[in-house]
Image 1: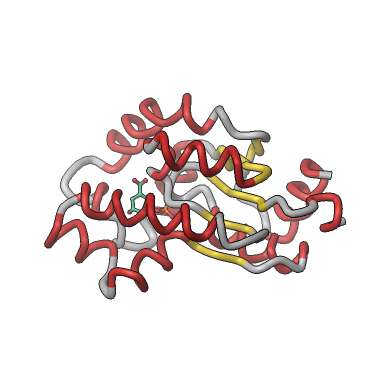
Image 2 (image 1 turned 180 degrees about the vertical axis):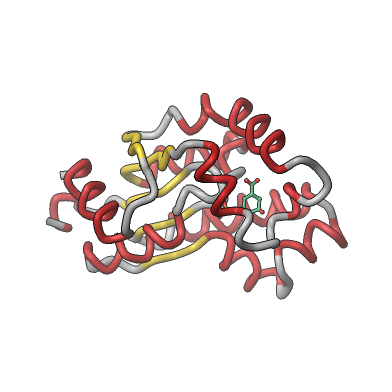
Length: 172
Ligand code: S3P
């Protein structure tokens, strides 16, 4: 199946908690493609965690790094890339995603996103406010950009393997 993709990448976009990283990793295995997680690559490039970046340099610093890392990754060849939830606010990143291949918006109900992000305390944007209100606000801002994706997948609370099979059906 992967040959049908040619030199295109599969790029996962969507809100935090939508499953981009865990699904992306398995999707890459299924497609026999390299997997990259933009958040993890930004942390490696910056030599600090995303939390530290927000805390010591502010969100703008993180967003600049995010833009550069996503450009570098997508220009490095065909892969499965899971992006950070806010990456699509950058017009340059949206252009890279559009050029890079097949983008998939992992859409999930807000209560599922909330449940998932509540398991870990690693998202600076959710720290100082009611998380549900923040998720709603961010989704309202980003929805038009997520909607530019090649495909939209309606995700839910199901085993990762099931979700991956359904995504493969959607792509091919
Ligand atoms: C963010 C999402 C996070 C991470 C950062 C900001 C966002 O990535 O990039 O905390 O703005 O939605 P995930 O979508 O992988 O959680």
